[in-house]
Length: 86
Image: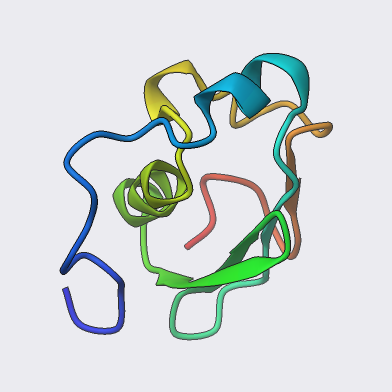
């Protein structure tokens, strides 16, 4: 996918798995303008055009998206619309 960081992705997520258990990540998803810019714990990961790309960015940051609550405002700051706005 153009514009994202899929190449060179680690085989195994979890470099921050211990952090996930004690500290929730700070995820910011900006309003949609040719994708939604995604920053996780202060690091910009790219522009997500759909939920699948957002999940991939979380995986790259070391978080398991399968266990991520996308509706929890303490975990994710949706700006300009929620998870259904792309």
